[in-house]
Length: 311
Image (cartoon, rainbow, N blue to C red):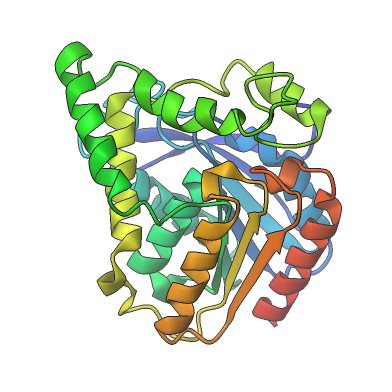
């Protein structure tokens, strides 16, 4: 990652993980805190430009490598899996530990949780679990509408675990997701063109040694636990109906069915009575909005939303 003011520290988590936590301090009078949750098979360091932009708009920023990703380590886990057991619970415990740390570092400020892709599911889980601690949530490029597909995925994982064990790469789900999504773009140059139209950003991802790997059977199983929790309508009952949501997807994002998953989440929240839900489906955008052509306008629009939410 290029040198920046997105500084790295190690945060011990009550779950036993040693979290790689990046932070950026707000410039000028601080308005709030944004906690960024990254996607699958990437890491928090990739969010440095976004963090620096938010800092320039008056927001403290924190982003950590989730278990199995980047520079985070744990005695009960390893690269490409969350933990030896009970992985999703530990992922969410780490999220709470990071947010507690951010609040202690910058007390008295509203905290908004932000998530992209896998991080969107994590962020939405955090809303469902600790809504009273959050001032708002940004859910970007996430799919929490798996439905019956989740059962099929679990069956595949059962066979893969029987053949190779819990901690082997799930090559079948890798083919069903990342590799399959990339086939949507016949003009593709690499295995990651589904992420963005910006060739330079795609090449950065492809050449990053800790990006683009196939997740383990264990990680996929844990992640499906998180998506099921997010999809359960009963878990919305304790979330205040005036919780602000910023939902965003791309019309060319195969991971969210060309934005359909984000529209479904919007309709679900509105039907449940939520009154402050913004939805943005960006024409032509692929999966990684923050690395897409035209990202500057979307970052500015998001900061405007933050300004409204934080008052």
